[in-house]
Structures are given as structure tokens and as C-alpha cells.
Image (cartoon, rainbow, N blue to C red):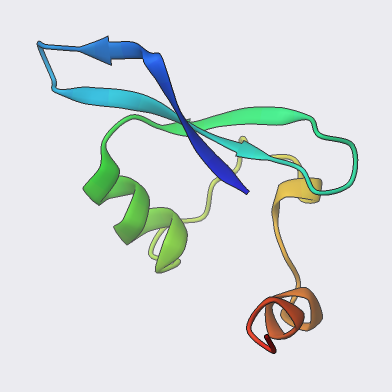
Length: 69
């Protein structure tokens, strides 16, 4: 699950902090600030995020489950 911290808005970059939340233990991890970079790198898989714990990375079976509904 992803969420945007609305308190982190900056008029300088017109962005918010973007976090991922683990579906297992509700731990959160800051991913990015820029929405377009987030989509390109994280959602489209163009960049590997080494700083993200494994619990935030879905395997193929989990991704298939999400899209089966």
C-alpha cells in the first residue's frame, strides 16, 4: 500500500513524501517525493530500490493475487 504524507508538502518542489506500508506488519518506508519518478522507477520497475526492505516488495504470486479481483 502507498500513501502520501500531506504534511510534507513543499511549495518549492510541489511534492509530498511518498511512503510504502507493509501489508504484513504495517511498517512504513519512505520511497520518493516526486510522483512521476515514483511511477517510473518503482511502479514500472525501471530502478531497483536497494533501501526498501523485502517486506515491501511483492513477489509474482502476490502481484497476481492483487490483480485477480
